[in-house]
Length: 68
Image (cartoon, rainbow, N blue to C red):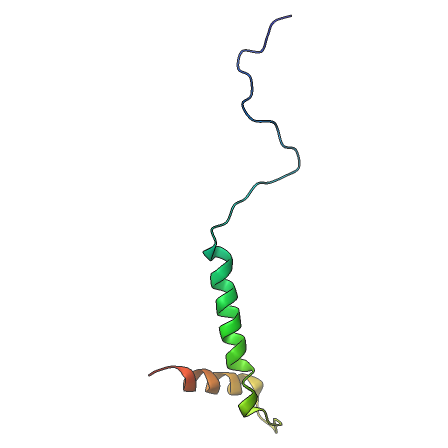
């Protein structure tokens, strides 16, 4: 019985996908989500919305927080 010509160096993995992400690939979206959530959920401006669209409130909050 002949031996295989090229033995495999690594064992074969079936059904698993190995994906390695850098640390910033998870950190940056998390920071962006927390930042945007803090813009929307500012408890100092909590009041009942009467006839206003929530999107306008979010945009007004965003405009106030930007430096220009």
